[in-house]
Image (cartoon, rainbow, N blue to C red; front, side, top):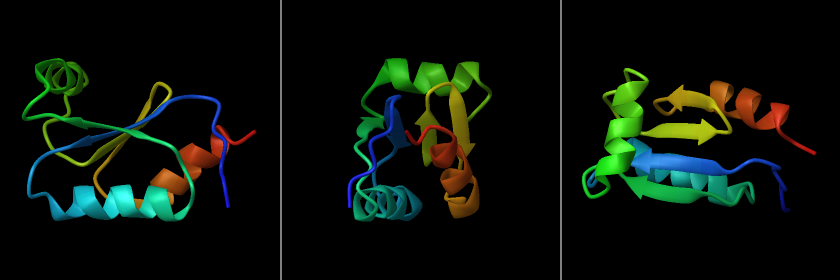
Length: 84
């Protein structure tokens, strides 16, 4: 099953973050292509989250929308708004 989403999907993650790994697995299982940005290694990624007053991981970004934490219902809702 492939889900073609018209906007980029980004997972903001940090090392040894169990919920981050579960978020990535959930997206992979559903066929969503995504990019991972490690906020500990990618200063720009950390600054982007901080500019949105987000200080924890995981964070899912779909287009201009952010889902903070492993909130599967919110993730499904945001992703469904971008489904072709």
